Image (cartoon, rainbow, N blue to C red; front, side):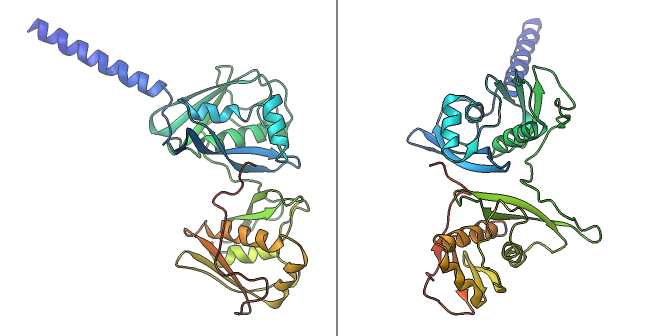
Length: 310
């Protein structure tokens, strides 16, 4: 009996140790490999301060979450590569990142040697880290520690006191409705160079719908560094999603889009990205007052990712 008790105790001890190890070791996100690479969404800053998602195929390895963060750290290769896309890395050069994932998808990132940053740089770093990691199915929230210690804020007041879920991106300046319900729309506008799609969060009192999102897209961005794809005077007649196609009918002023090379494709991409908030969409069909027009091609396929690494 004594021998049986010792055996049971040993088994329980081994089981407890295994559970502890499992909680400490990084849980790998679902593999989506293609010839040894994983399509991974990373978050960078633009030259004018926006935070944007970019899909990049990175070599598959154990601890892919930590590997993803390594591409956000400033350094000769990372900075040069990001600059070619009009982007900036967000984690200071020399910073080391340790990632652990526990039960319930709670991740903990420890950063060492982050040095001195501006308030904007701090916020960009935190948002980019959290949003990059929460793109992985195995991670629900992220805590950040500095040099192994928990802190309430970073040097310039950026709050890191609690676990953080994915952040809304590039919240617009302006008035937020104070009466009734407030709703957030994610809108998409090209940057000034038309090289990136910039996600923007706009708060309105309009109930979330594809039609409402298109209305906001037509109204255009509030930031002068972003482009409105819809010519002045364009009005929405109807917008709906049917059989996986986002169908948008606009007034005749939209035909002026042909005056700017590439603007029609940009408009389609922005409409597609907006539609995907509401339903799974495979293409976009734009008509003018219910009819086809010279620049029209029915159900043009749209981008799989907001931005892709080039």
